[in-house]
Length: 78
Image (tube, rainbow, N blue to C red; front, side, top):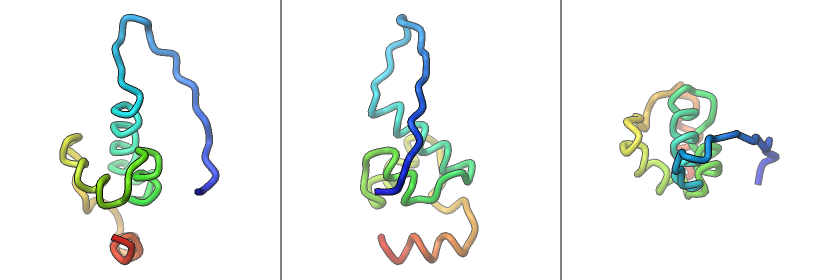
């Protein structure tokens, strides 16, 4: 496991959020923004790369949205 930062968010009590779904949403959006690789985002989401790739469409995120050099690196593990 890579070293990771821990972030604390303050969410109003009346907002219903599922921790796993929130982590997956955040991972998908950070992947979409190019801030995380597929592997990093999958780790944040708590999923395998294949499982994470399969849920990206749930968040309207395309699987292939980052530099070709990264695709080759990630594709060799899928």
